[in-house]
Length: 71
Image 1 (cartoon, rainbow, N blue to C red):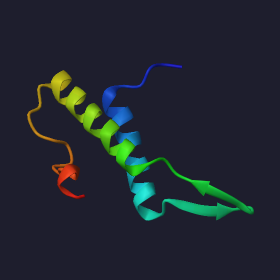
Image 2: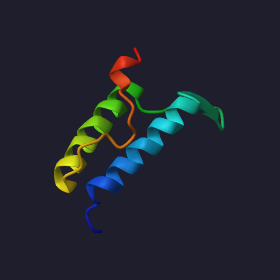
Image 3: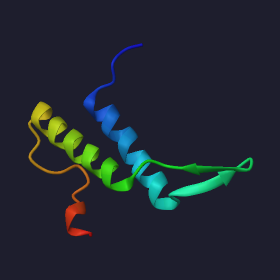
């Protein structure tokens, strides 16, 4: 299995953030399912954005959103 690129990993984290924002937990087949912690995902997202920006020479945030300001 090939290693994923930083951008691929970032896209996965952003998809997980979108899923958490829709619903943090839900029931399926009588079981309670809880998604990953939003704050932790946002930390990983920031790390991957910074890494991607260093790799690509980009100087802007991919989403353009400062989630630290939204607390």
